[in-house]
Length: 430
Image (cartoon, rainbow, N blue to C red; front, side, top):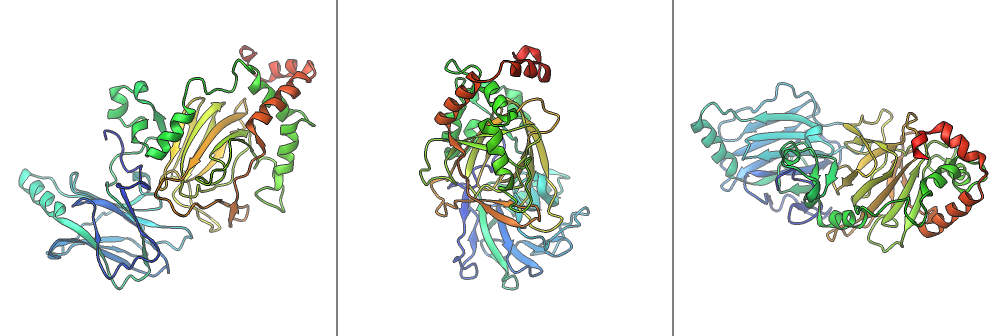
């Protein structure tokens, strides 16, 4: 693949998942390709340090990795050369929800370590082997390509392996997906967009269902659909306005917050292959937002149908008082499509910023891949006190019924509403 790899983390053959019953001391973990991969693990008991070793076939040489409370220490085994990153000041953390990863890349001769999602944004340690001449480069490449498996030290009983990824961490991962006919060569060269073909097969199915040019809100059947939704939100007594008020305690039972609400209009039924109904149109009034939440390790595709949405991405779901800061944020505009994989873009917060002039409407699509046997029916989120809670993705109304209701409300609206809209929004929209 030409663009960023590592996005099909939940699908074989690019990832090996470990169950809680796997014994990591009876046999070693074999790399899927010699000299490369990403080892993802948890520190279950919060014990220090966490030690594991990348070995060659004869266990004569390799790399010893030690995560301590202060840093990440890496040394070669045979000659005990320290592979030091002078900027590294982080290691294991006591923050809830944290997990860790180490990436080995023989082709580019780079080592990375990080906390949370395995990507360049979250690295805490990096080392690039010296490349002063061809002989040294060749020698280092041979050394790295000789590494075949991982052994977890018996001193590190708290290490719980989560995944082994086939591909190392390399490029920055684009957040916007484009289809083949929309891409030019410079888009690929600069990793500006993610080609649709780089999505997992599960996400490609979801993408194809909602990415078409005719998948729009304002169609021939109801050309004023988005205006009708705006009207219903703004008008007391109309369905959207009433339902949003009813949902003000949805995420925090004791502290109503009308801004922490959005509407979920579902398309189809729950087939048991996703957390909730797989296709959901979500309506975000101006200033409204979601809590920070996860996506149950499902694949997902999100398309903006109207307005734009501001998204903050987090390395992991942390219930500590101070939480964790987002590692990235991006505004997605009308018709832009973004994605979620079982291990990337999983934790986020969505906001229709107050400075925006329109309600934002998105289509969210979720599905578990064929290898998923958990089928967790909830999204975990952080409540107002920073505590992790479960949210069962429900439906506020079926799409067909909702559209008919919006038609009815729009038809019965007072004519004065149109004048108000013209003052509030751009005149060319009407």
